[in-house]
Amino acid sequence: MFTWEEIDNATASFSLKIGTGSNGTVYKGHLNHLDVAIKVLHSDDKSSTKHFNQELEVLSKIRHPHLLMLLGACPDRGCLVYEYMENGSLADRLQRRKGTPPIPWFDRFRIAWEIGSALVFLHSTKPSPIIHRDLKPENVLLDRNLVSKIGDVGLSTLMPPKETLSNRTVYKKTGLAGTLFYLDPEYQRTGQVSVKSDTYALGMVILELLTARCPIGLPEVVERAVEDGQISDVLDESAGDWPVREAHDLAQLGLNCLEMRSKDRPDLNSVVLEELGRLKRIAASVSGVALPGSPSHFKCPILKTVMYDPCIASDGYTYERSAMEMWLCDKDVSPVTKARLRDKTLLPNLSLKSAIMRWVAEGGRPVKE
Image: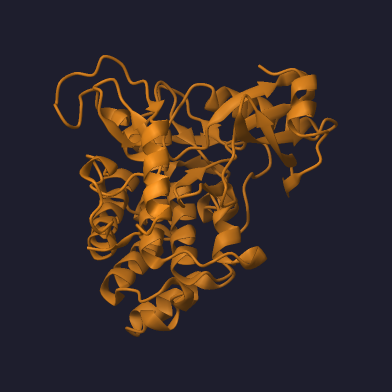
């Protein structure tokens, strides 16, 4: 936990505002030698207090490579401290606000899979599955390498532990929570929320990744393009030369997630994530990066590409942090030796990172293999 004095000092008296939402304001700060994002919730708003308690309860118990990491809090003043995401929100980048460069098409396939994997993780938490309920591009943050992480779990619903996978539905007596255009139609009509509610929102995000268009009327536009075999007409041209077949498949998957009835939407884990994984692998094979003549120890043993954030695991080997964090989500053995890891601690390999940065500065750069 942090004191108010530490929060005030970290933000230079809240001098750098980087975002504002319905529940609070976000400032950039510097704490314990790290850049951080500090959300200060509206102090006179009861819903903000609930938002704070919910976010603290959820994020203090879970860790996933594609969920925004909570670093601490200042409960007395309703402050939440998160890791800082250099590239802002997915919404900002899709709309290219402040002149930011477009997200390449192959990164968009990967981002869709990352979001899906985080949702599957939330839905699989024990003893209580978690439904996000407010997934949208504004709540997906991007780090310096465009790795995505879902944030803003303050509206999430913790399901009763006794509910089964096929019957995770809760009736909400309070008003609807979430954002129009991403809200499950069944939830709007009945007040019942389920894991398929997040599937619906993911479908809309997928269509926005493909088109970079406003969500108003977007499903109808994409559906018409798919039916006419003209998906290229609606793709975001700034993303580069899309592979048409895979873009069509991703669009169809997004539309399937947007079915009006939850029972008609595909299962997130066994169908949606599997298909997103297939498309991600195709994208990686087409755009896989390697550096010509790069030293082998610069490459991650998992990704086979040059590392940007190398970290040392307990097996003594160095990996790209995001790849190793994903590996450790469901494995406790070394990716290299297959022996059981002593622990899951990851330490930054600063000397290797410095060497890679020097090498890149001297002319090394990612190219297609």
